[in-house]
Amino acid sequence: MHFTRRALSTALLALGGLWSPLASAQEQAPGAVLFENVRVFNGSGDRLSAPSNVLVVGDVIKTISATPIADPPGVAVQRIRGGGRTLMPGLIDNHWHTMMAATPLPTLLDANLGYLNLLAAAQAHATLMRGFTTVRDLGGPSFALKRAIDEGLVPGPRIYPSGAMITITGGHGDFRSTSELPRQLGGPLTHAELIGGSMIADSPDEVRVRAREQFMLGASQIKLTAGGGVASPHSPLDISTFDEDELKAAVRAASNWGTYVATHAYTPAAIQLAIAAGVKVIEHGHLMDEPTARLMAEKGIWLSFQPFTDDGHTPPLAPANLARLKQVQAGTERTVELARKYKIKTAFGTDVLFSPAGAARQGELLVTMGRWYSAPEVLAMATATNGQLLKLSGPRDPYPGKLGVVEEGALADLLLVDGDPLARLQLLAEADKNFLVIMKNGKVFKNRGP
Image 1 (cartoon, helix red, strand yellow):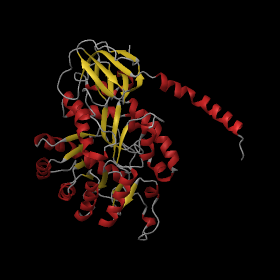
Image 2 (cartoon, rainbow, N blue to C red; image 1 turned 120 degrees about the vertical axis):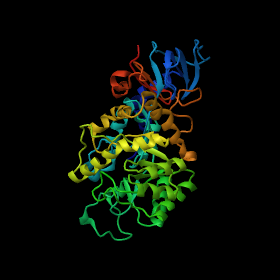
Image 3 (cartoon, one colour; image 1 turned 120 degrees about the horizontal axis):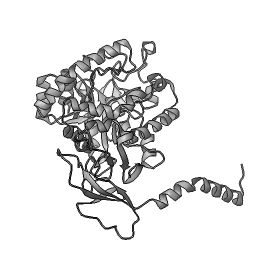
Image 4 (cartoon, rainbow, N blue to C red; image 1 turned 60 degrees about the horizontal axis):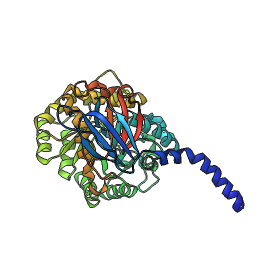
């Protein structure tokens, strides 16, 4: 089709008209935001600050002061009157599945990736509106959505992507049916592999290739499934999957890229094998024993923990998978006891899969941690402590800067809460009602303040 120069100019002007509301909003956006008269939870401690003022300039916290803060020269300032309410860091979920949390498994196994991204984008907005300004994605093709969020095309949390979870034939993450076996070595990829959900690797060489592919795509860390799992169709909980040399291949690849490996593992055998290979973060760990807990503490291994309890909310799983879930739930209490006894570095995550209702309970699952930890401990875990784990990505960190704290110089991810969550943790489960302001990267995405 041929366009004259005049016709092309007219088309561009028309498109400019379509885009002008967004451009206008960006041009008129304030250069700074001033929270006045707030009491700060800074990511640690058991009490709020005295009444304070917090100035955000650009994407960072510029000034925190008990006295009034003067407007920075030449900058438009948006004022938010806190009225003595709580200002705290944005929440961090360190085990989230951006593409899978709210999408049913049959849809994931069959739908076009473009449609899956649209579903995930809607869920990313919902995640941000629950006050989770950062997530560590532990498996799934989240790279495109992360880019769209970072570029401001859609609202959502910061994403630390792992890319496809790497598994073995029959391991956790292999969703093939038995009718698809045997797989021709070097043959066509599965649907899950083609969309980047999971990758099957059955040798050190294959592990290296799959790990390097995820780093090429932009992974900040990689995830392997070192043992059996709840949701997959073929992997009993008691099995250990990768051999030590296969795990070491992943660790070496990650080390070469300046970052780390996290492994899905429940049992002592799977956890200890992962640690021997150099893995830095254990996801789950709900069936660990005392020697394993002691080893994790001695080696400084992180435990990324999820509050799996029999709380009456049954996920959409087959009977055999539900039986495995019961096993995991039965080990939750003991794992918490061991983590506390040995002072294991513990992060918080949810690991919701395939369930819109489950995803909507993200904040409620955080509140569940109050069964074993005090409110200050829960808040610290979901903010400053989780922020520390994220920084294990080193030079692969997509968001350099401090996360999970309210400090001068930290990245400005902030929540204005109508109440004191140190006194009433339940406030975090009712984000729509209690989070009056949600800020990420210095931008206000929700403002229902006075």
